Image (cartoon, rainbow, N blue to C red; front, side, top):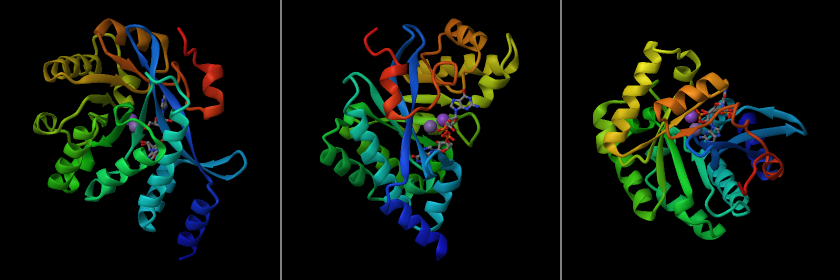
Length: 250
Ligand code: G
Ligand code: G
Ligand code: MN
Ligand code: NA
């Protein structure tokens, strides 16, 4: 009860903020979007990471309210970006069982005036397993509104070929554990190559997550990976730092 009280208070005090990490087109090396990553600033400069408070929000029944607050914030920030820059937003698996999810998202977009075409929702593979029929309906509704869908942490969950064929994904985000360990002609690299070829056949774009070294970047470019994300290309940063760090115009 205490934890629930603290959480409600944090929501009321607007202690949750969003950082933004660049998504970079690996061909042109330009930023094409940002992923919103939530932070709980308990006291100035002191942050609780999302893995911890998202679970807490779920346990205390506050995940819907938290998500709405974060999405509103992120869309407002994204309205200040150039109009070709997209916003990626994480949805937790438990929310894929919410039949109202698509409606909630659409009403925030309408309220803020953010175009659906510039929003991308990131879901994990486990999210699809909870309630497959609700998930399918929700994704269909979001797609029909023009929202893009990315499959996050690809390769670590229970992804099956049928999921890739039966859900309307626009992007696959290859989990950073593959990028961390991959070596020239190693198994991870071969797996990535196979994923690229599968994605291309299904007309889905591929994002490599967790790029930290130039050697990884160069190899992923050689392999033809579409999009990259990682500390090398940009760390998650607050809205105020985006203009300083990311060269919009070029
Ligand atoms: O941001 P890292 O910066 O620590 O994020 C850790 C995890 O928290 C990732 O798995 C990420 O997908 C998740 N996460 C970050 N922001 C959000 C959010 O706004 N909502 C949900 N549900 N998960 C988030
Ligand atoms: O689960 P999801 O992919 O949404 O979360 C991305 C997580 O990975 C966030 O916690 C983000 O801060 C982190 N991250 C992003 N780029 C890098 C990177 O290059 N290296 C590491 N170690 N973590 C990263
Ligand atoms: Mn993500
Ligand atoms: Na991810």
